[in-house]
Image 1 (cartoon, rainbow, N blue to C red):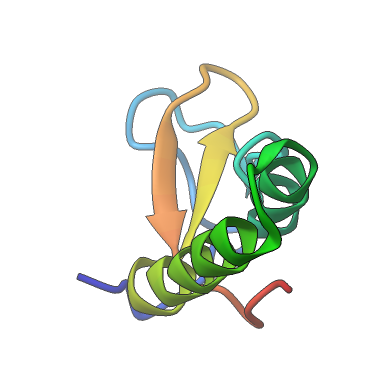
Image 2: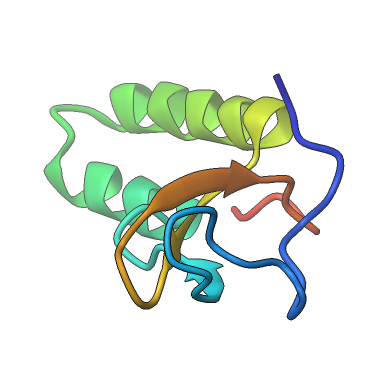
Length: 81
């Protein structure tokens, strides 16, 4: 289920009250680039990229709390390529 809002300065972690930032290891562009480097074929990498973009559009981007590491998905402002 997609969330309706993206994190704002006022959004706090439900565990510790820390701030959320995009999880740099799970950012869509990072995942897609890693798959392109390691895929057996370009077609596999493109299917993966399409699946990642669809997941981001549906469920949002993974964010993490800077204090405790708690992760949550928030709707993306734009879908990363």
